[in-house]
Length: 206
Length: 251
Image (cartoon, rainbow over the protein chains, first blue to last red):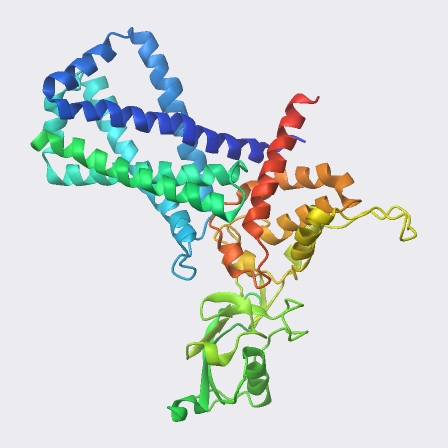
């Protein structure tokens, strides 16, 4: 038997945690360098541009575009199979189940805007270099700042809650105690990552 | 204070046929100590008159054992899936809202068709192929270390609470739900049933099998028999992952 949906589901889980988790952490680290000031941030970007164009594009397609599209499209299919009911069954895990799907919907819209505007329009079509000044001017609009902050928090929660459910799905944490420990650790990580994000995002205006 | 408890108010969601539109009706019955929802429905059946004095068709529902063993009277009481026979009026907030478990097709009023669970049990082969019979001394023995687990899971009465509470089970999805999935584990523990372990795991790996579980963990919260459903689902996740590796590398 082939069991396509089994392998797709497991691939969706693995792809989300490992590849997209990696994308998220890379974004956090790269953007955190803005806390060191314009030179540090721009030097970091210049370093990345040292990578030859075809290799860089290959990395972008294989490690960013394809995993995001697969996880996003299959994720929409999964989210549509759920009828969220935390108002009837208000348990912590059920709220997180619903939040996992609500953050996903936000991220679909947010990523279309973020990738579409910054990567495809600004960098791709207009040929502009991403720089400290560009990010600063983009985030200077309070609405954009808020949408970006929510986008980051959504991605961070989705990733951290994903750690907990990944451990259940792969049968790593079996009993309620181990599941609870991982859940608490992941939520702790979620708070730390959100605070860290807020720190580097506001560093542009300090 | 005692004055307030003289009657019990119900808001019941009714539906005349599987395809007709649901509507609600209110009923009020005299209070008596230790009254439960099934006894209240029987009271309404005796005199099916709504609070505004209209004589209506008696409310249809299902019940059998009246002691939380058969699972037949599962319905949604004040928004939660549970057994009507052990839902004590004294412990419920009034007016008490009764609804059918809409994860399943509604036949009439609170009566639902739960045959989908039976189909799922057939799908995961929730039985043991009997291979002859034995004298007691010759019979294959239960593993004493897993016997308590098997006993716990065998309490499952296929009531469907876990399916009703699960956000991933319903007309919008093909997930078979916690109860039938965990039954596969019960029969995998059996000294004879374990020979068909692979077949059960294969069935769980199919579309709508255990992979459709979204870890909302409502099932374990609502299970009236306190079966540790999420623990056994995680064990089955381990088992199907191992089976997948076997499928990939053993051929």
